[in-house]
Amino acid sequence: MVRNKHHGYTERRMRAIGGASALAIVLTLAGCGGNGGSSVGSYGFPQLTQDDKAPITVWVDSDRSSAVDAFKKANPDVKLNVVTYDGSANGSNSFRTKVQLFDRAGNGWPDVVFSTQNNDAAWASQKSNGKQAFAAVLNSGLVPKTTLDDFTQGSLNPCTVEGKVYCLRNDLSQVVLWYNKTLLDKFGYSVPATWEEYQAIGEKVAKEHPGYIVGAVGDSFASEIYFWSSKCQANDITGPKTVTVNTDSTECKRVASMLDILIKNGTAPNVSVFTPEFVKKYSDKVLLMPGPAWYAGAIFNNPQSLNVAAGQLGVAAPLAWQGDTAVTGNVGGGTWFISSHSKNLKSAEKFVEFVTTADDYQVNLAPGYPAYAPAADKWIKKQESSGYYATDLQALIKAGPQIWSGWGSGVFSQEAIWAKTMTPAIAGGKSLVDLLPEWETAIKNQAQVNGYTVK
Image (cartoon, rainbow, N blue to C red; front, top):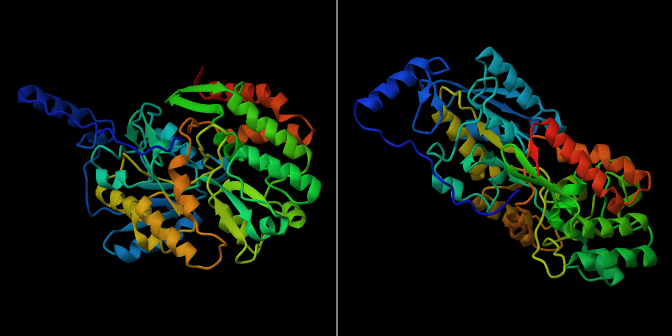
């Protein structure tokens, strides 16, 4: 799920060079552009000869089909070729693999791509096999600055490499504290405001109401919920190919120590929330649950999962560590890319701006919390009007800008590292505090395999 502070976007524009030297440069670029007549245009990257009437090819996953339909309805004059693919879901890396094939062939690139991953800008912004970067630079005039500035504070951090924005976020997955208000009232507990209070409730629940839980650590994104929200510097991407990894810190140890206690007493089980086992054992047993915005529909208000009744589910702002500022992690949230190889950048930009900002999709149809702030406000009002929730949803708005920027979006997958290194070890009874050095080593090794300099 970086990173979220409101961007003052640095506009890097071509400087005019006068006289005959400028003409010589333009002629040289036009004659030897590597993409069939491409030249560096006003947006700061080599561009093909443009045709505003050319159809654009758009890659989406099946969940984004309604976005395509909404755009077609609002823009019947724009010709689309729509290709459905897996969206690089579950780390399949299909987006990158296909682009590498097109790079080698020298053609075939789609104009627009949706990805479920937040780390694609790390590779899509870089040259590959001698070819220009796949992703078009968006903040040098292609997308209006006014549009970029209206995205939730920091939401474009995963899309930003060295000051250049290469994608637009579809939705955010900020971590908040979900809770069952009915159960909290019944047990006489108050909603915690700090992680220390949260741990205390977990310890009370284990003694007073065994079988009930306050969280879960069995998913590959557990580190993004708990460690990211503790400012643990396990994934600090400091440049296109540099990362700082340090799990030997107070910020990492405090959350590991807390989870060790809650795992041992059974209130934070090492079970994935997407398994039948979780649903069978913990339906009507979830008291508290730190988790992303999309837990509301995917876990709680879902007949195939916990199916929490209307009027019970509440949401609170991200927890703070005592004496520290509250921050939160991020678990997912899709991204939209425009190809630098597009022959119709105008239509490609129109499509991407529509699907990320227009009420017709983001407010009326989108299942997740929009990254575009004006749409997010309206989306929240719509959700609140449903009557399902026991509280208002303002905590989601508050949490959006609180995603900690010290956890980056590198090419390698933190979720895959956690699933391979930590989940089996926890299942084997090992302490998270004791596992921190092993986790750090695994992260460093994977980063180095991907060409990162590790600090």
